[in-house]
Image 1 (cartoon, rainbow, N blue to C red):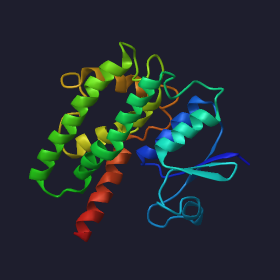
Image 2 (spheres, rainbow, N blue to C red; image 1 turned 60 degrees about the vertical axis):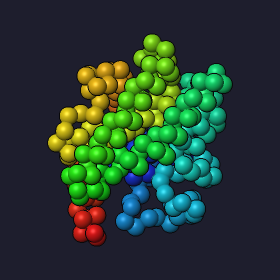
Image 3 (spheres, one colour; image 1 turned 45 degrees about the vertical axis):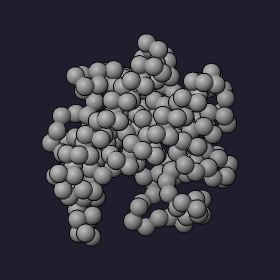
Image 4 (cartoon, one colour; image 1 turned 90 degrees about the vertical axis):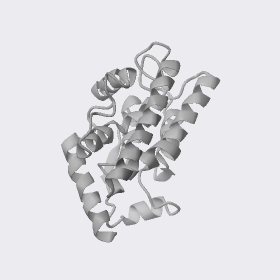
Length: 227
């Protein structure tokens, strides 16, 4: 029986984060697929506060919230490559941007799946792009000329933002617009995203764009029927 388990749901970008981190650390784990329709007893027992995925079970002890889990993996399995920067300032900066992604940028991006108004979508797309412009600048400063936010290898902020690449591609197609990450508007992020998705720690966990689009349309249909 695996001492490390991940409770997740395949379309979730937040579930990708611990999966990538565990792969980077060469930690074997068992993946337990849950559903949003009828949450399992294991999930409700493991995360009674938020009742959300992902949950990491390490020797049956639950750790919740994706970024907390990534930091836990980094500390609990020190033999693999470091995920968080060793420099105190760099570590603080990456945590700042990771928090911005989850608290500010993602809620705006998520509106594109729920909005039924074309006018709202146009305004929301611009807000999403404004956030990506900030990330473009952050990449230049954090990467210091290297391939990833964390330098030569994938690290904390790469995982935090990279987990949304699949949905960025899917939502762009669903909205019939150009890719959010492209060579003209976000050249550094575009190149970074290609490297990130091709990395051995990532490629097996990145959902296919068409499958995400199919799931996204189900979300839209459900939301429309309830409105």
